Structures are given as structure tokens and as C-alpha cells.
Amino acid sequence: STPRHASDRSLLMPCLATLCFAVLPIVAWAASPPVVPTQARTGPALAAPRTAAPRIERAWARATPAGVSVGAAYFTVRNPGPTDDQIVALRSSVSERAEIHETRMSGGIMQMRQITEATVPAGGSLALMPGGTHVMLIGLRSPLAPGATVPLVLSFRHAGEISTSVVVQALGRDAPGQ
Image 1 (cartoon, rainbow, N blue to C red):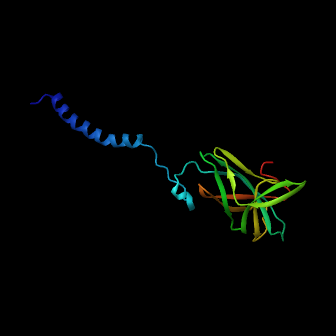
Image 2 (image 1 turned 60 degrees about the vertical axis):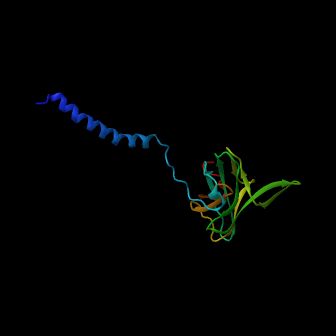
Image 3 (image 1 turned 90 degrees about the vertical axis):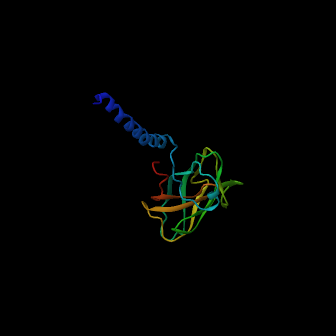
């Protein structure tokens, strides 16, 4: 008869081999870099590799009285990416058009005009605020009511489209928390 320890050894080797072949793929999978799905994008940014997407923060608008056909939206855009990016277009379902405007002092007179793009610097931010660069919602389909949310889509030259929701504040109120 075979000594007990010899038969244990003959069973042990196939078990160890099977265990190694079962564990090695799991170890290799765990050591591989994670696969992160990318956000759906459109436009020229499809060909560019996705780095860190711009973030829209503290988006708000003031309520509008009945009969007023324009409103404004404000927010901060943060660009954690390594290159500047530009907001080149906007749209919202609550208005016929959405445009980027800037307010400037010229000859002692405050003037507002449409601009074709607004640059968000690499590693920096762009504040859209009252009295400066902001979004004009032109041809409102209905008044902006306090507490409502307004959908807004920003088109970036490199990052593609990013959607956000704008919270409507009561007339006379500034940014949320102020």
C-alpha cells in the first residue's frame, strides 16, 4: 500500500495547478487599468481623446415677470483639462435662442453685446455672472418661474456638448446661497 503522505502529495499538485490557472486571470484583471466609459459627445470633439471634461457649477437664473421675452443664466465653468476650451454654442428648450453675451463699460456707458465664443482656460474657470459674461435666453416660451429648472446645453469646441440644469431664483435674488 502507498504511504498516506505520498497519495496526498499526488492530489495536492493537480489542485495547486488548477488553483493557479483559476487565480492568475483574476490577478491579471485586477492589475489592469480600469476601463472608464466616456460621455456621449457630438461634433468635432469625437476625434479628440477625452481628458477631463469641463464642469458646470452653481447654474442659476433670475425669474422673469409675465410678458418679458428674455432671461439670463449664470454659472461657473471649470476646465480641469490641459488645454483651453471654448463655449461656441448654446441651446435651451425654454427659448428660441440662447447666446453668450458680455457687458462692458464703454465711454462711461454700460453696453451689452453678443460674442461668438467664450474661452475657459486650461486648469482654470470662467465665471458667467450679472454685469459680465452671461447667457441670454431670447424668445422665452414662458416666464422663468422661481424654483423651476431650465435645461441648457453648452457646446464646447473640444469637449463637445455638456448638459446642465439651471435653477431659477426669485426676482431680486442673486446666486443661490448669497
